[in-house]
Length: 259
Image (cartoon, rainbow, N blue to C red; front, side, top):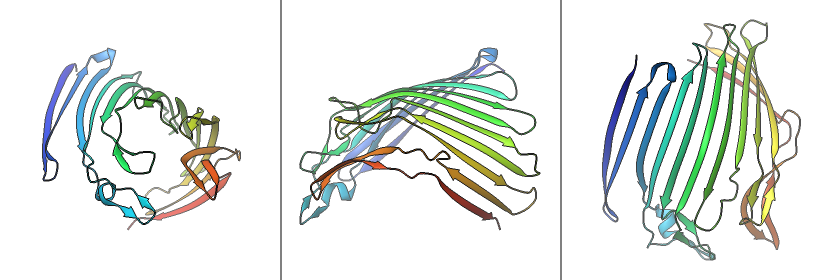
């Protein structure tokens, strides 16, 4: 039935070298009946610099910085979930978060507290099930993550995913087809760009009922697409590297025994 649930919480942490931290959180869930379920979530968190970030040094690299301050994050999320029957569900989620003093590196490779980081996005997801065991899950995401100067490298603006699971007609054998489209991404401090790509994966799973074992076969990058991912920029041996080719078609056979 209809109703509203309010959840309040907080945590208190004391770190000897950095002081005390309060992290309040709020959650509101409202069931509006046929109109769906609405959620509002707000949270805060912190992270103290690691020993590696504060003190690591090497003969040719000065990375650590004992003066680093803790990171602090705040997040806000609003969601709506609607069911169109017992076997279908649509969910949309909008979110925003920002991080103050996120640990990064300066031009010399020393760990520092960077400028304010913020990200906003919208996620849409639809799930449909059928009585014969088939299932379809689709999702679309649009997002933007940036600091005070530019958008982040390796942060796609758009992503689309779909996963279809089907019975094969052979007892206990299921087939799954997964596709993923990722839009173009910037690299090399925003000066380069890797193109968008579309991948497909095929999975077969054989799991007899009542048996402690199952076998799964996965074929990844089914159509052998050539694509690259952005990586951290470096200049080893005078070559500037900012992208890395990824695997073509590959397969994996997995056997699981539960005892």
